[in-house]
Length: 299
Image (tube, rainbow, N blue to C red; front, side, top):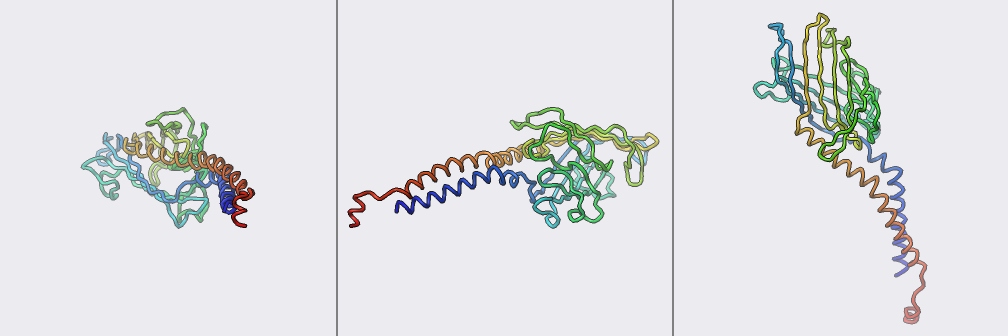
C-alpha cells in the first residue's frame, strides 16, 4: 500500500513539474492572445461644429458616438483574429438610437470597417483569407495595443489617411488603481479625401490610455477637423469615452490582468514547489521497506 501511494505521489509530482515548466514556456504565449469572443460596445460623447448644407453655416451641436466591435469567427484562427467594426456618430437630439439611417438629418457619419490583427502583437494582418471582399488593407495597431505594452512609439492606423501614424508614449495615468500608459497621436493639417470623392484638409489629435498588461484601450479622447480645399470647415468634432465605458474597461482589464498573472506567475511557482514536495515524498514511500512487525504478521 505504501509503495502504491508512493508511486501515485511520484507521478503527480512529476506532472506538476511539467505544469511548472509549461507555465514559464508555453502558457504565457497561450494566455496572451486576443480572445475570439469579443463583442463590445464603446460609447463616446462630445461636441461638434458641423456644416449645415442648407444654410452654409456651422452649427454647434452635441454628439453621441458608438463603436461596436465583433469577431468574425469564420475568418479567425489560432494566430489571427478578424474584426468587424461599426461606427455611428449622431447629433444628440431627441434621444437618437445608436445608429441612424443615412437620410436622418441627425447623422454625422456611419461606417463599417473590417480588418484582421495578430492575436499576440495586435498588429494588422494584410492577408486576403482573413479579410472581407473589398476590405481596405490596414497597417499598424488598430483597436488595441500588444500584450506587455512597452513605453515606446507604436504605429497606429489612421483610416482617413489610409496609413499608420506615430502613437508616442507620453507617461502614465492611474485609473482606479490601474496604471495605464498614455499615448499621443498628432496629425497636422494634411491633404486627404475627407468625404467620398472629396479632397480637402484633415487634422486630428488623439490621446489614448492603454493597460500595459492586456494592451486594451481604457480611455480615449480626441478631436478631428475636416475642411474643404476652399478652407470651409465641414466638421470640427471633439469626443471622449463616457465614464461608464471607462469604468467597464478598467474592470475588464483588472480581471484579465489578474487571470494572466495567475496563469503565468503564481501557477508555475505553486506547481513547482508542490511538485517537488510530492516527488520527494513519493520516492521515499515507494523505496521504503515494510516495517518488521508488518512482515512478521504476514508470515
